[in-house]
Length: 129
Image 1: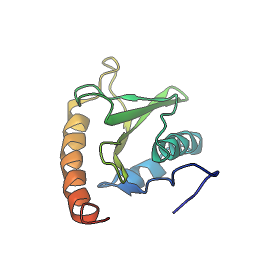
Image 2 (image 1 turned 90 degrees about the horizontal axis):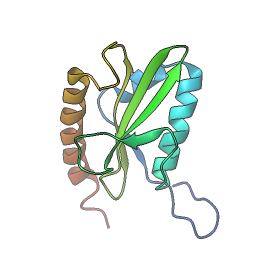
Image 3 (image 1 turned 120 degrees about the vertical axis):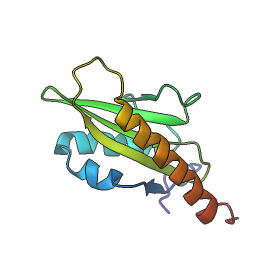
């Protein structure tokens, strides 16, 4: 556990779903640092300025970090829907030239990994006290 100043809650663990961690490691260093800091803030229960709610997931339980680097768009999607952990669902470089919408293929990956995260959470954390 990581503890911060007196009175602060410990950081929630970060859980990686599928290839999200490996995918993030392929991003440029500046983007990895920016996303890493935003994920750290999520672990503390805060939201970084570059994170926003991903549409279609009801409220702010599924978040998207949007970063730009040398004309390329990079995204990391995570969920704070579970009280004891933050799950990183997907990390990808957006290559579509059709607006800012998240491509359908990536949305399908996010949906699938969110279901996997829910199953993993039930198995690992719900028996926890």
